[in-house]
Length: 101
Figure 1 (tube, rainbow, N blue to C red):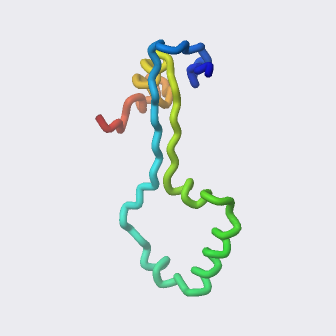
Figure 2 (tube, one colour; figure 1 turned 90 degrees about the vertical axis):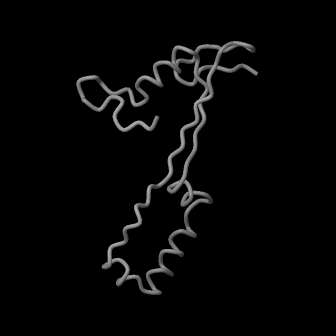
Figure 3 (tube, rainbow, N blue to C red; figure 1 turned 45 degrees about the vertical axis):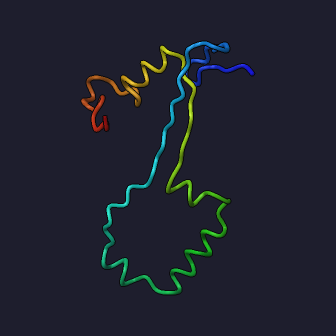
């Protein structure tokens, strides 16, 4: 099976250096529910929500809450990704902000 870097397309032969990058996005519920939303939550609205969700493709609702992707990167692309995963310009002032170490 031919493995290539998901970023640059370079061939990665068996035994070569390569990196598995796992990206996980999970909805960040902060625990806040607006009282207006709670007061307006009637049984008919809940039934309508369930009906809407039942019309969605399998897994769509869960994908909106939690999603995981895996990438294989060559050493050069791994280095570039780890230094600037969102490919932000230095002048934006956002490069490397808010990273959990």
